[in-house]
Image (cartoon, rainbow over all chains, first blue to last red; front, side):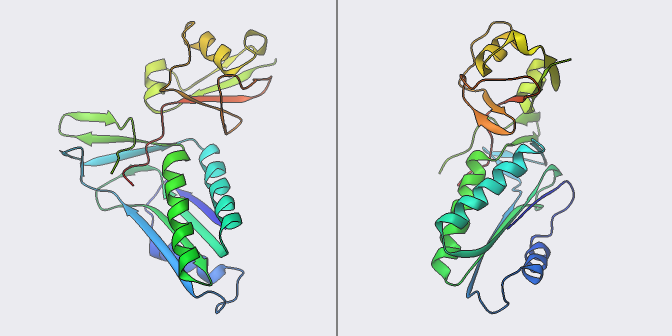
Length: 145
Length: 80
């Protein structure tokens, strides 16, 4: 299990490759790898967004992400989980998050990946401040749908 | 000197006009008492979350000397 927070550019595919190469499980023991990559959009609530500042709570963010990964490892027969997340200033197209789950079979990998991601979105202390034409604004709640 | 370390994040930090402060632990026994103290006798609003020592807390969670208590707005993860 690995949780990484980065204040500089995140290369999700390199992180996944690096983690898999260094992982403790044997190279042929997994049959499925589920990977989700989240990327910054250039629109939100009908406005064009030119920049995003992602604030976090150092210490607590890591603790919450580790706890989320441990819960998923306890609930699903998965071999390993990687979460890497950006903070700081982001531009449209920049990767924000990668969640990768290795498992023997696809269902556990896909379901655990989704669970980790949804828990991250609702529990991990991150706050978005976006820059639109009218200036800067805090995103005060999760969008739905 | 015994203190409780209080931190604020995001829009709440801007509203409070500071990122952190220290409070005398004899002045507050719970999260809501601490909030009342730092926010001028205001009740803890629904839109303010709290954490004690890096874990989510309730209004009635006790606070002690050397604890780190944080107040912040709801987290914003984005559209499912």
